[in-house]
Length: 290
Image (cartoon, rainbow, N blue to C red; front, side, top):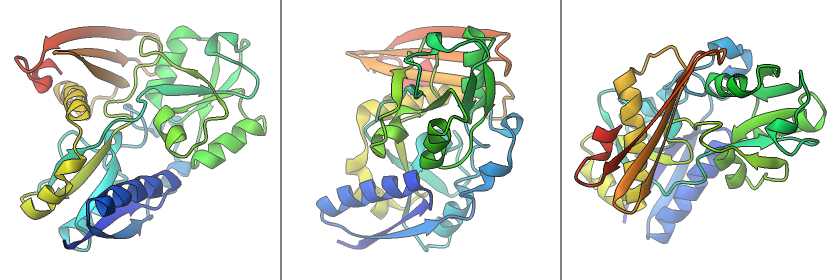
């Protein structure tokens, strides 16, 4: 089999993701080479929370542009992304070839001294990198003092341990993948903190029409994760990728049914709109439900 060249960012988590996919491809009989693209790795340090993308993180596409340039130029054959970082509509010339089995999609409440959000004292300092999380936190605890949280996972956890924050909110998936779960005190229910669309899943991006690479990575696709995240991302598409409001979406397949929970909020949490729907799969497609 041909050598497959993987492009990824240079962050700690991105390197884990690329290594994970490399191991799966090697087990399938492929030779694999990794290429890291770290130019945007630390841009988020200079952004305020108000500049952070409403759907969780910097604007979608910021972390993918350089890797897509390498894909287009033929320097890599596939790219590994956190699916929540990929725009719902990829630039021309690219496609998602597989969506991997999903890790825990919910957010985690991490603290050194408090076991759950309800235990935080009035005015407690909470760190988060996402307006989606901020809005939902404010909706249930308007008294909290919420501040931007920057850096890689190790940096964020160190700031918590050093007392800069009373608690921080991170994606459970990243903590689990890096085996840094010691400070997780509460996995936040979807009713409290609806996750970002695609959170916990990895998207494998290739050049559009590259059927050879598509066939090589097809085994990585998980049907349940693909259906659920397609549903969630369809909701984003319907609301508009440039929507200025925090959006959360979580879909789960239960037997022949798909259940979708969604939230749209004002950044300050003053208004939070929640809704849910059920659809019979495959009669109603996951995309249609979203």
